[in-house]
Structures are given as C-alpha cells and as structure tokens.
Image 1 (cartoon, rainbow, N blue to C red):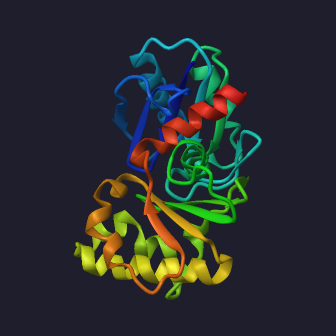
Image 2 (cartoon, rainbow, N blue to C red):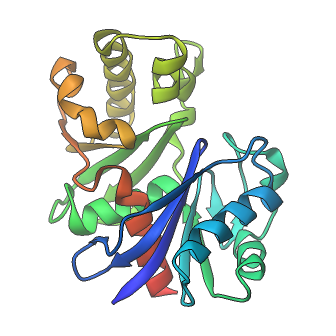
Length: 246
C-alpha cells in the first residue's frame, strides 16, 4: 500500500508516495525550497505543490519542525512564529482540496520510520534518534514506544541552544571542518547521554549520507552510534506511516 509523506524542513520541503510494505519511497522524491519567511500560507502552498506534482488524491502525512499536539503547532523554532497555535492539519487539508492530512513532529516521524524499518528495528531499551539539519530534532523511544515532542536540540550546551552549536547549519555557517564539527557533536551526544543513558543513538538528517566523515571521529560516548538507514528519507516514510494510521 502506498501513502503520501511530506517532510517540512527549515531549508527544504520534500515528499513522495511511500511503499509501506518495504518502508521506502515508491517514487523519487520531489523537493522545493522552504519559503523565507516560512509563513503558514506560503508553506502550505509549497506542500500543495509537492503533493500535486504526483497527482495524489489520498491521505497525506506531513512532518513539522516543532512540537505538535493533536494537529496544533505549539513551537516553531526554524520556521515563522505565525505557525504557533495553527491547526496544521486543517490548514493543509483545506489547501489540498479536502484530502485527509495527519501532522506530527519531524524527528518523531523519522524516528518511528527508523525503529520500524531501519537502524532501530528490533531494538529495546532506550533509543534516541537525532536529526541534524537546520536544527537538531530528536525522537526518544523506550522499548520501542515513542515519547513524543522531546525537542532535545533545544537543550542548553555551552550557554546556548545545542542546535545553534552542533547542527549541520552551524557547521556550514561557521565553515567547520568535519573534525571540528564532530567535536561539537560529541559534546552534545555526551550531554544527552548523561541525561538519558540510551543504549543507541541513531544519527539522521541529510548529513547521515556522509556518516563515514564524522562518526568515526566521535569517541568517549558509551552508547552505540549508528547512521540512519533511511537517511534523509526517514521523515517522509514516517509521515506516510502516520497518515496510514489516521
């Protein structure tokens, strides 16, 4: 069964039909740039552009980079603050001509996909998925059950938000080498490990495609650290899973 998933990020909005039997994209994904500023109306237009690219007419799952309870956005760190308080499922459903829409936190979606089809499959205990991109998203699992909306990228590290120090955007903005960035990521992982004592870290986001450049440089962290198997498609797959559940 194919279901559509859309992943809203701080820099790009991407989506595709997903084959839920295989846990992979059924067609190559379509991506558009996130509008700046990323207002609800403009982002909804971009989501519609992605969905309409495929002529899709069924349920749609959409990830959002912030806390989502029910279908209402509660925080918006890397998009326009106008999202706060918006019923995102209602807004997007209206823009998509009445299609049923399910909305959830972006890292939670990626984490659920990795726990079902990817690097976390079959793993018990405490597992933390971290997505590195414009910010740092997180998904916390205890014996396979999601603790939603953890937003661990906003933990304080060195007197500032961790995602301002160790995200992929921080690497690009500061023109950090892989070694310099890996040192920042190690400090962040050590901080999260101190708080939650996970058995496994899954590192996702677009940078997971280049895991060999930085993961071997991270030491002095007790937990196992692995790259996301679904890489930057995990959010799309998790969004589609949420839409299938309704």
